[in-house]
Amino acid sequence: MAYVDDIGTTAGAVWGVLVERGKMSLSALEKAVEAPRTVVYMAIGWLAREGKVTISREERSIQIWLT
Image (cartoon, rainbow, N blue to C red; front, side, top):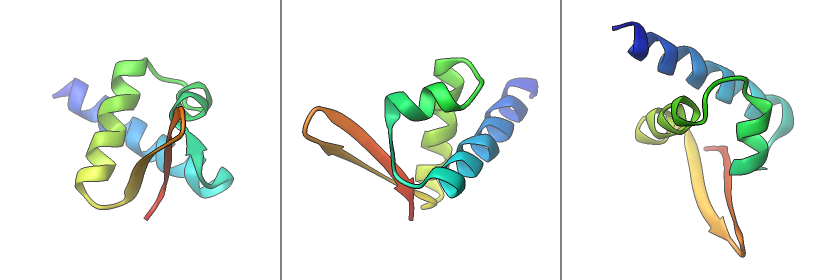
């Protein structure tokens, strides 16, 4: 269960960064959130599944923003 807690905590951090900075590329978001890349990806998936973020490919990058 500890890993699920890490994902939830990281989802909160992702949310906070997006509230503060708005729409971001996936690579910029990874750098802004201090967690392992895989946990950041899982946290983004968690938020996407809950309908909290939108993910879109724009030209050469993946963009993420709050829904």
